[in-house]
Each structure stands twice: as structure tokens, then as C-alpha cells.
Length: 334
Image 1 (cartoon, one colour):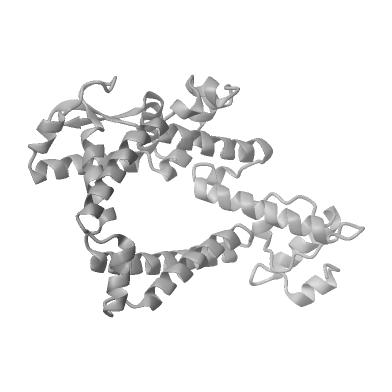
Image 2: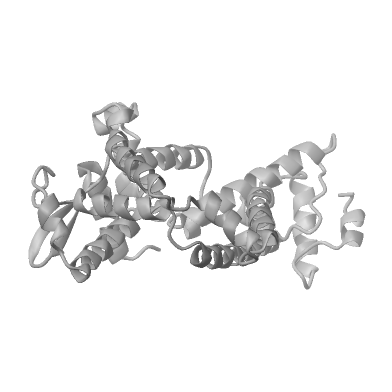
């Protein structure tokens, strides 16, 4: 069960998403970090490309050119690029396959494989970034990040009075700028995707969302005028609404979005197995599925009530909690 303090933080974050700013204390005063709208990307992206082109004219390496230089001079092995590509493709397959299983052991297996491959990929990317150093892309990104910070902090909740003007921001020392970046990162973490998923699975959110007839009705504006966080909120809200309205979620996982997704995918997969393999009398092969897993997914009567009771009795006898091949044959499941 989610703690009261975490629930309070999630309510605060939800209210901030609706208001399109995050509220924090900074140097003893309330400050407001603006949530950018989709349309705000125009100025940010325009600034980035302007900086990029200026750097390109000065002869600074692009990432593509710098990578070619490193490989040509044996500072970075081309095989590492193949490893990065392959690991990325492997992760895509692992995530896809994780959505196709229903056994607890299989789900945990994919979780571990995903973690191992993500760590491996991150280490490769870090090693590459160190060698790449400064390029047109990284330098343009740094300048754009500074603009983003300067344009994000406000003195008022209407976000019309900047905390620092362009000149005032330029006069800040590195420690002061780092402090702003740190607070901005706190904000980014508070409105992270995992926290947004947690918000949309809470009762305080669903009570409001389920009463709205459309995204425009919920936020009072057209989609292109919404902030990026509002768009993410609506996306995940509709996703979990579909799950909640058509399924009886176990109470033990209702506050855990990742486990809800695992449960939903597992239930769907095991039902597909039942529907595609059941014979005319309702018998179905569920080799290796434990009694605990069947109850967890709420699988009712996959092989007839009497047959199901036989399966449960055999599962109770099993030391592993799973049916052996011999037991499955004796029960007529194969």
C-alpha cells in the first residue's frame, strides 16, 4: 500500500501538472518552474539549430565526423558501434517478449535480462561520450539547456515574471547555475513517467478523470496547447483506464503501475493460451502454470469446474507448485 507521504507528493504533482508549473522553495521564497507546452518547443528548437549552425561554421566536429575520426585513428572500435546497435535491438526484443509471458519465473527472467543489457548499453554509451568530447551537437545542447533553465524559473505562478533576466542569468556564477540545474532536476524527477503512471492509478485522479468526456473537457484546452506533462498524463490515463474498466485488479498490486502492466499482459497471454488450445470439452494444456499463478490472474474454470479442482489437487501435491508432464497427461491436459 502506498504511504501517506508518497500519496501527498503525488497529489501535489498532479495539481502542478494541472497548473502547468511546479512549486518549490528557493533562497527562502516561492519559485515556479514552468511546464512547457508543445508549442513552446518552437523557440527552444530554433535556438538549438541556430547555435548548431554557428558552431558548424566555426569548424567544430559534428558527432558523425568526430566518430569517423575516432574510428579512423583507432581511438574507438567500430565493433563497439555494432554492440550498441545490437544491444539496443536486444532490449527492444526483450521488452516485447516480456509482454508475451505470464509465468512469474519468465517475467523475472526478462526483468533481469533487461537490467543487464541496459547497464551494458549505458556503459558503452558513457565510454563513447567521453571520447567524443565536445561536438556541434553537445555544445549546442549545453547552450540550449542554459536557455531552458533561464526560461523555466519564475517569480509568480502566472509565469510572466522571470526569476532572472537574460543579463542577470549571465552574471550568475557556476555554483549558482548548478543550484538551479539541481532544482530543475528535482522537478523533472517529480513529474517523471513512473510518477505520472502512479498518479493515474490513484483514486483521487480516477474520480475526476472518469467524469470527463474528452481531453478538452478534462483540461479545458485543445491538445496542442497542453504541456508535455499533460499529454503524458492523458496518454497513461487512457491506457490504465482501459485496464481498470475491463479487469479486476488484485489489491496487492493496485498501487504499482509496473506490476499492473505485468499482470495485465500475463492475464491476456494466459487467456490467449486457454482460448486457442481448449478442446470441445473445455480441457486445455497449461503445463508449468502454478496454482498461485492461476489464482493471481483470476483464471476461472479454464478446463471445467471439476477438471480445475483436479488440477488444483495435483498442484497441491507437487513440491514445485507446477504440474509435471506425467501429471498433465494423466489429467488429460495434453
